[in-house]
Image 1 (cartoon, protein in one colour):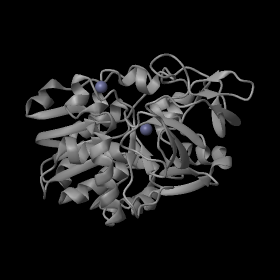
Image 2 (cartoon, rainbow, N blue to C red):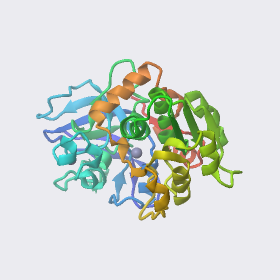
Image 3 (cartoon, protein in one colour):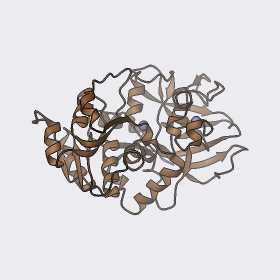
Image 4 (cartoon, rainbow, N blue to C red):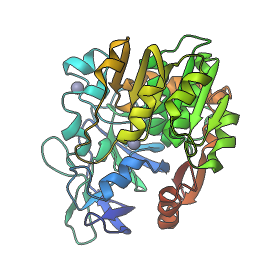
Length: 370
Ligand SMILES: [Zn+2]
Ligand SMILES: [Zn+2]
């Protein structure tokens, strides 16, 4: 049985994402078919579309999908038709890091998430001419009304949360929240500085409030985001322009230096500012992905005083444990995803991409007419 769907296809790096009719082949035993209700646009999709991630083209991007399971393969045991799921990144669930509960460092992360095919080299999408398209982007390729995923990366949503808005839990929001709640683990009444108030940074701010941080400082040149950051939990929000030495200003604001910093921009200048905002001891997590090599010079003398610079992928969380926790926090009003999101109909994909690129929206979610 072949199934048709509408998907946004990238045929060349730097080219447009064009809506096309695609077909999805029969499921393998471990696969599920998901009818997507909403999919967030993450910066990694834009980086990939520009050629900054080694995923082959033609490809369907999108990796913050959520929807309803409409078919399951014969070996699927933990999900059923009709389940509402959010799709996370893919991981093998078997390697040393996966079995230790750290699947974002899965030894097979790159082929599973950027390979564009199943592990045997076959793909899950064909265009209207019958030519194969690359799919399996983050185990989903969810800029599509129908998606092939697996139990490995599909997490059942609790009732009473919006399926349409849940997709960003799977990447951007888990990245920011996981970095705070699972990696930095700030003490209550500690201080934290968050650089970059996109969806990742805003999730870090919400998580800092959940953790009970006394001082939560957000930094972003886009002042349209400052009020939202305050509403979500920032005790102070600063535009970096106008400070000759932002690090010194932040050390003063935090009474000698922050306990933690989250850096979601990825530029050398911002990583250095984040490090220089730290007290002693202090930890800075860098999350911002830049295409290709991204060398950063760090002053070893500065690190010696008990300071740590660490890199974090996907919040270092196991989606199967962490996403239901985030969904529960959302339902309790402590992680208000809806405040970050503007929805766009899938046919208005170009408008959504424009709004993301210009910084006009914090998180764009594409919705489908189901
Ligand atoms: Zn693994
Ligand atoms: Zn992402």
